[in-house]
Image (tube, rainbow, N blue to C red; front, side):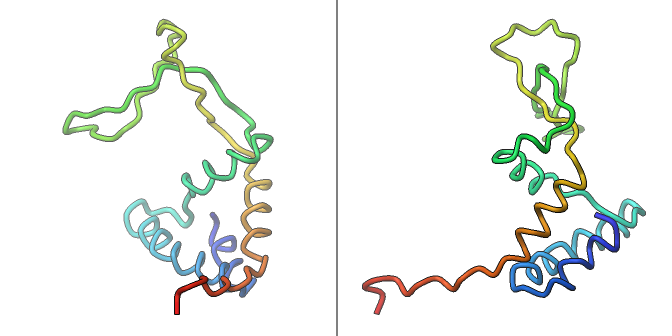
Length: 124
């Protein structure tokens, strides 16, 4: 998300857009202060977007995937692309998505006004 992309939800002004902007403000600050980058990525929202919209995926591969549990790399995903792992252990890894398509979906979603939830029956 470029700095201009980061300001878009604030300009949209719906409650969901303002919430998204506020939540990601900390991400933007971290990216600037820790990585020195002006922008940031949104891996969890991208993963959530491609579940119902697989057409957003532009590059994917089958690979053996594991998660490191040692101290140095704990939690990091290890991808073995050698093709030597048995087929049942292969995972579909989505490597790239249509950035413009994802941003359109994101901004269209936060533009919608979400109706207030109806009062729950029996909650008086």
